[in-house]
Length: 398
Ligand SMILES: C[S@@+](CC[C@H](N)C(=O)[O-])C[C@H]1O[C@@H](n2cnc3c(N)ncnc32)[C@H](O)[C@@H]1O
Image (cartoon, rainbow, N blue to C red):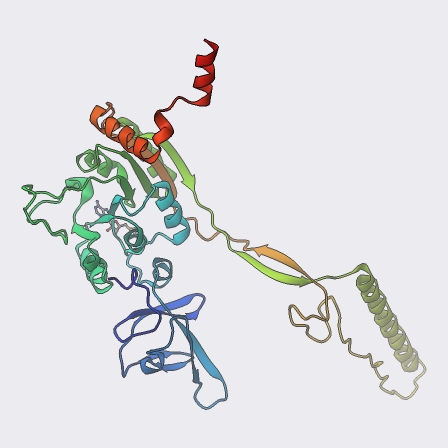
C-alpha cells in the first residue's frame, strides 16, 4: 500500500509524513528513529513523533528561552503533497486538479493518460482515485526523479500507476516491449504492446496539438473519452481547438478556474451610540488641545515665566469599539459579535486555461452489448418491461 492510499492512526518508523511548520511551509519527512527534524523554531527528534497519532502537535523548548516551537505531523494526501513537493516544473494545484478530475469523470475504473508527468503533482491526485494512470515524461532526468518518487511513495507497488519515458508529440502513447517504462509487459496476452484503452486524457504540454493526433491509437473504442488540455496561453488554446476539431473531438469547452479563499471570522457589533460617543470624545480632546495651546501662546507674549502646561490626563478607555483602548479578544462574551466572511483580494490559482473535449470512437450501435444492458436492467428493475401508467391509459382509451 502506498503512503497515500493507506490510512494509519499513529506515526511509525519508515512513514512518509508531511510536517506542517507554517501555512506556507510544509515539508516531507521520512520518520527515522534517532534522527531529528531541524527548523528555525527548534530541533524535533523523530523519536518524539513515533507512536503519536497523526495530526499531533510536537513541541520543543526553544534554546535559552521559556518559549516553545511546535510543528504538526500530518499523514500524506495528494493535496498536501502538492503544497510540499520539490518543484521540478510548474505544477497543477488542487483547485484545478479537483475540477479536472470531476470533468473527466475519473473513478476507480478510469484508465487515464497524463503527459507530461513534470513534478508529479497531478499524478498523485490521479493515483489515489483512478483504475490506472499512464504517465509520460520526455525529460530523462525528470522521468527518473518521478519514477524514484513514485517508487518511494509506493505508487508503483500499488500497481495502478506506470510512468514511461517518451516524447508523446513525436512517438505517441503506445507502450511496447523494450521501451523505458515501469509498465510490465508480461507477454501472456500475446501482445507486444500494452493495452491502454484510456477513457480520460490530461495533457499538460507546451504543444498538445502535436500529441492529440496520436491519441486514437490508445483510447478505448467502447466509451466516451474525455480530454483536458492545460495551457497557459490563449494562443495555445486556439491551436489546440483547431486540431481537436480536425481529429473529431466534440463538446469542446474552455474553462478557467479562479480560486479564492474565504476567511470566516467574527466582527464586533458597533452601534450608532458607540460612534456618537467616539465623535464626542474626539471633539472634546481637540478642544482641550486648542485651549492649552492658546494659554501657552499668551504666556509667551506676556513674557510670563514658562511653565509647562500639563496635558490633561484622560482615563484610558476600557473599551473602544473603534479599535483603541484595551484589546478585546475575538469572541469575548462581554460583547456582541456577528459572523462575517472575508475574501482574499487576490486570485492565486489561475495558472492555465482548461480546454475540455470528448470523443466517441465507435459510433455504431453494438446490438449484443445493448441486449446485455437491457437484460441487466430487467434484472435490477423487473417492472421495467411492464407498460407505463401512461401507456396503460393510452391502451384503455383505444
Ligand atoms: C508543466 S510540466 C507538468 C506538470 C505536472 N502536470 C504536475 O502537476 O506536476 C510539463 C512537463 O511536460 C514535459 N513534456 C513537455 N513536452 C513533452 C512531450 N512532448 N512528451 C512528454 N513530456 C513532455 C516537460 O518535460 C515537463 O516536465
